[in-house]
Each structure stands twice: as structure tokens, then as C-alpha cells.
Image (cartoon, rainbow, N blue to C red; front, side):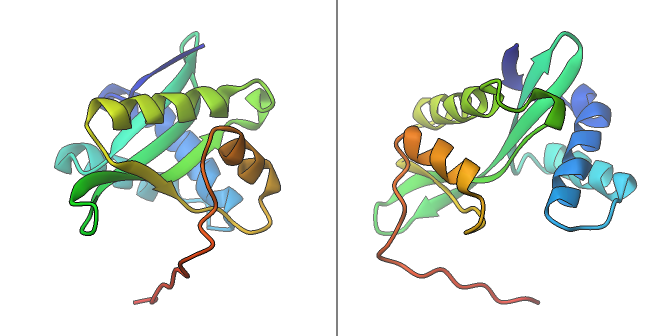
Length: 146
């Protein structure tokens, strides 16, 4: 297995996995929109997508969005998406993707990587904590649907 930065030629295969990720989060199957979304990320260069390959197959991905910390006055990365194909779970694929994300953060001089996960996703929480991520107990995060 190898983890690399995704290329535009990866989009057709990546979109299938991205659509499965969205379905996992109770969204409707929409491969066309998933493909368009990923094409837009590449065209606008507003995210970094790391993909795990086995042979010619994409078996997992993580997507990072750039942001900034006003308090720290440094770049940060938002690890927004992490998904591994069900056939390849429990094989450390997510761990390798997380390690690649950390390496990318370090190489770009980022202050930190932030992420969020569902309160019920204990498997992901265990992975994050085992890799040194600290649960933020100090701040509440809010969102406003538009």
C-alpha cells in the first residue's frame, strides 16, 4: 500500500470512494455531484487530498482544507474527511493516511491539524487519540445551516 497526493487522473476512482463516504454520513448517493465536487477542489486548488493505493485501486483517502489560526498567527489544516473502503478496514490504512496528513502539515509549516468526528464514532476517536490528537474540552463548536 502507498499513500500519495491525489492527482486529477485519480478523480474517477476517488469519486466512487468519496460518494461511499457521503453515504456513510447518511447523504444520498450522487456520483455525478461527488465527481463535480472533487473536480472543483482540484481546479480551484482549495484542498489537499491524500489517497491510499493498493495496486491500481484507491482504497482510502483523507481531505485537508487550509485555514489559519488568528491567535497562533499560523496556517492550520482542517482534516475534514477520512474514509477507508470497507474491504480494507482494520489494516492500518486510516493510520497511514493520518501519518501522511501529519507529514503534509509539517512540510507546509502548519501550526496544527484540526478535525471533528461524530460523538458516536468511537473507532475514529480511538485512532485519533492513539496518534496524539487531543479532544478539545475547552471550546464548543457551533454551526449555522444556510
